Image 1 (cartoon, rainbow, N blue to C red):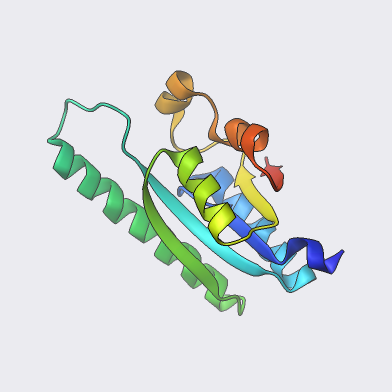
Image 2 (image 1 turned 180 degrees about the vertical axis):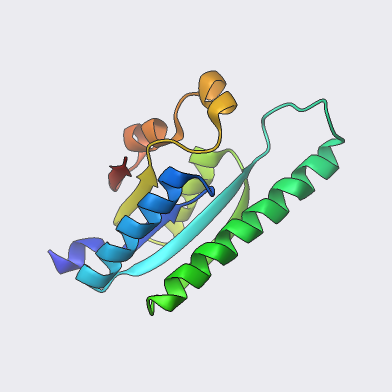
Length: 141
């Protein structure tokens, strides 16, 4: 069983559910001696009229960087070193690409994230991951 979760991917977005899923992923790392990979994806497909697109994406990049740094600090206190990715594009596609590239055995994701508006338009990220992923998915509530 310990070989089955060698590489764990934890998509995070700064939400409470994301924090819970990160906590659960860290427990799997402790239990199985797994490698942990964190990913934050800047969603580029949502149209925005309030700000210049370039400014909007820069705000999201900064937010994503902060979310990843905060998570990394929390993990470091537990003695866990994580590999970190900040990606841009379609959230589900980027998670899938990273999962395949990093040869992940498990994705641990929160059931709800910050994207409530995009969820109404595009559907739940966790639902899409669970339907399309070629590895196991744990959805944390």
